[in-house]
Length: 271
Length: 295
Image (cartoon, rainbow over all chains, first blue to last red; front, side):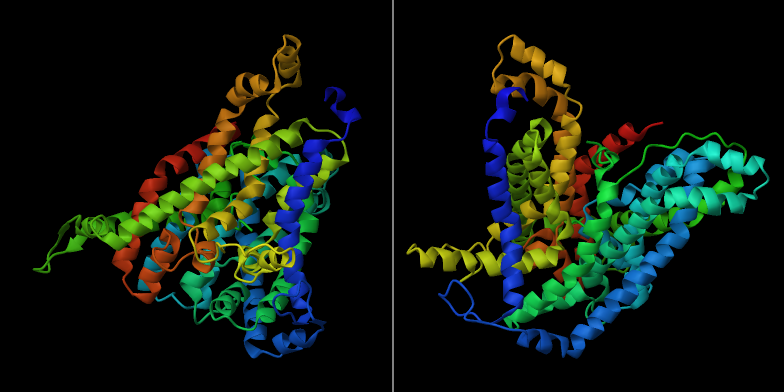
């Protein structure tokens, strides 16, 4: 804008410094704690670095159990979600049927209410169905949380596929399945993969439903971490878990860029 | 990380395949059934169960007794007002923090804006529980900030950990990405020409903001606030880990009433009260998204 580009971008430098301090710095502190053996007040840097607490954390049975629970849970929810949502997304993108618009928007319903209130209302129903404290209760509640983006993102992906290529393939005699497999899927695939990944990562970190419906019988990694923090366990346990826990999120960060950078992201919020 | 947030809605599809009604309905049946069973039905059921109560004689009838208790109970009211306070303060702070960032990102050029945008979106990829832990290590008693202040000979801070400011700081941090993205999308609708035109006739930056930019992004600001309010009002993880034990925000309050006190009726009553307070924001949010996506 105007002459600003010729001078130093002072507001930019200000935002960059403040945001780095507010967003990157706290995470660096956690990262440092994970590799610290001794860090006593008031030293500004740890007195002794080392991997002792990685061994201790990874030797705990509850950590492995929680990790296994989280992975099983996230895999199951993502699988079920893809199984029911991808065909539905295809139908919304390509087929006409009565009530199509209202059904398409019905997936917003779950996001029009304060989330934890809705979880409590669902939990009251689960209480009657004896689903509280069960693996499948947590699966169900997390499955509902994935519906919106597992349908809306793939709908956009299917729509972006070049219809003329599909018609051309059909003209030369390809079966509908062949067209879907060879033309539609390769084009829509990357965006759908991003949606599936988001669904897996979102479920992996989902804390509130897992805590309300699952705990204490079903303990996922975030739930275990809450109890580590509340019980004031060894400081480093939390730090090591944070670093471990962040790995899936980092993968999401790498892959989700393509979805987020496509401008439709925020506009979909009504912005 | 704001998990389960309504993400990436698509434009409403344009349909040109007709006459396959049953097939389409069949394909969407299971997700639609899940929404009805696990969203619509629990809400209706929650409202019905809190007003259709058993009286002393064992007969069922309409009664507002459970709500009367909530609105006369000192502790419930304290929790509600703490929640309203936290929601108001957090939403206001979010606007104060995010609007300048969004304005900067909309109008700046060069390599720095990319870095600033990356940082502003980054919290989306930090789960709330890791954020809570980082908060305690940095702002908690004898945390990193205390260490640094001590090293330069200044007194320690009054830690916001376990005070009402704890959840406020955590929730602002957590909600920055979506707020910035929504405001930025709104700013996309402000044309460069209209701003140049205003500048040509001598308007300063403040007047350009007030008369040209603000009227055009009013709707985006309301959407950002609605979205934030829906998330903050019943937030659980951050208030539970970082907030005071009593009074507590509605999220932890509902959880404790339901799981620790085994009192589903009062927990659902609290949930319906939360629905009531967020109704306007929820309706506005859905209306905006639907309007944007209309075919």
